[in-house]
Amino acid sequence: MQNNTPQDLVALFTGRATKYLAKEIATIYGKPLGDSQVLQYADGEFQPSFEENIRGKDVFIIQSTFSPSDNLMELLMYVDAAKRASAKRIIAVIPYFGFARQDRKDKPRVPITAKLIADLLTSVGVTRVITIDLHADQIQGFFNVPVDHLYASSIFIPYLRGLASASFNIDDVLFASPDVGGTKRASEYAKKLNCGFVMCYKQRNKPNEIGTIQLIGDVKGKHVILVDDIVDTGNTLCKAAEAIMANGAKSVRAMITHAVLSGTAVEKIENSTMEELIVTDTIPLKQISTKIRSLSVAPIFAEAIRRVEFNESIADFYEMAISKKGVTIKF
Image (cartoon, rainbow, N blue to C red; front, side, top):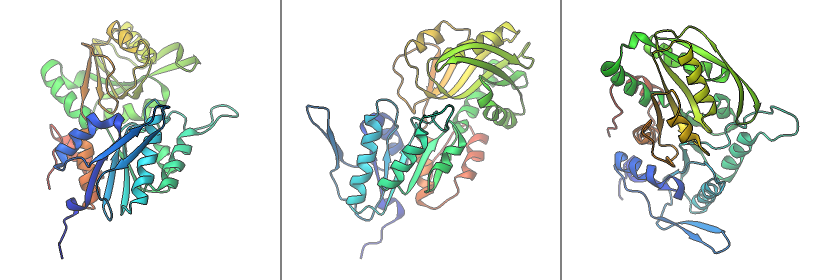
């Protein structure tokens, strides 16, 4: 009888949307991606399939659910296929959890789509979810299965420490939230680096359209770092940076996890007062910009997968990652 190690019982697969990231995760984890394919029909219908035996294995399916909705559908279909192929556990690795901004009823007669997606994933057979920087922490409660909620701060903070040692004093740094909803996120970054934080108060005319932005706090003579989970049109970010510089800041940068960057967002950032926009690769960049730097989340996800498989704490991982210059994975 063959004795299998936990790593032998792991199978890593990817959907089409996140293949670029899944390959890097697999390389760091030390196991090649499993063999799968998607049969495409002329009318747009498609059929994913696993091309190897996954019976009794822990199957990790890596797929972000950014637009179009085909990416979400493909993930659901892969999960269903894994269940019908007798996988032991099915773990959805979702670097970008789409529709997360629809996490509540902000007006009558609208869906809570983030809850709908959670229901779809669990009903189709997902036994665990690994994701990073959800738009709202309470989305974890929409699931009836364990959710490992990772944080991009374990990549951003070491990068910022290196930047500060080369360009400015960390004591002159302030963190800022571009809106009231991101205050908690900005304060957490500030605590980790013993810095202060300020807040921008915005009023929207309608979705994706900003009315006014007011700055709450003193930024004079400081290097300000805007932090948020999603940058979409770039309107909020650019207007917040403009307001901060107008109030006497030395420089403005932004650290945003998910670079949706729709429409003319890249052009707006290029023409903004920001010195740099630091993002992750949970969503592939649509356009290259001299002001945008992308950091890989592959080490975080590779280590999270390892810890899930070996039943180790993921909470301990954050402090280790933040205190060091980088993330390493060790079997």
